[in-house]
Length: 264
Image (cartoon, rainbow, N blue to C red):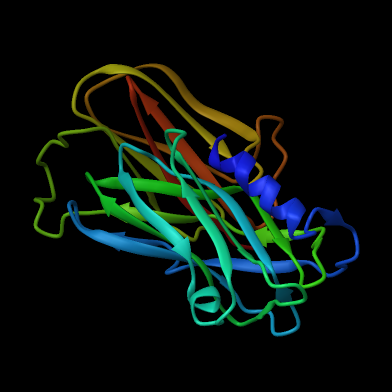
């Protein structure tokens, strides 16, 4: 029996697989937001709740990351669970490349946590220079009565790995890289792609739901730096609303991503 099935059994036994009674949306956030670490250095990303009115019995999240930029180390229940004095069932799974799954459940009947505070944490290590989008592809929160909140909001963030001692200027990049400036932007941002060797490459922009809005380049790309621009419009020419967007670069077998914010 795998850990996911075991968790489902525990949730059933705890009476948590009810849906519908919890009415309000729950807003979570990653912290620190858009963090920067050096190659070979560890860091911690926490899932926080700031809502004073919410009560929490279960946190269950699936989060994706770029395995070429950061390595997953460990995860576990946050301080709200650890300091509660309740019996907590928890787990951390990293069996799928580029995705981790973490969960924690208060097992006492009628027991629950109250915010604000840390619900879950993820420890990681920076590998090489680059930027990795951190996206919660699934996020579930159950209230003290065992019912799930119908809407859980956990906006993406980024982890940038950067060597502060690395040379800048005309020194060639040793690996594909992607940078955006200005960021935030209005009305145009520039995307600089730096490739150590000529290769096939694809650069596209996505919204926070993962929908591809526009392909900026697809095909052969030369070595060195090439700059592309995005004016906030999709492939039909429709101007997108203010908010956060992701650029993804696929070059050979390497993927890079960077988050930008369009302001109005």
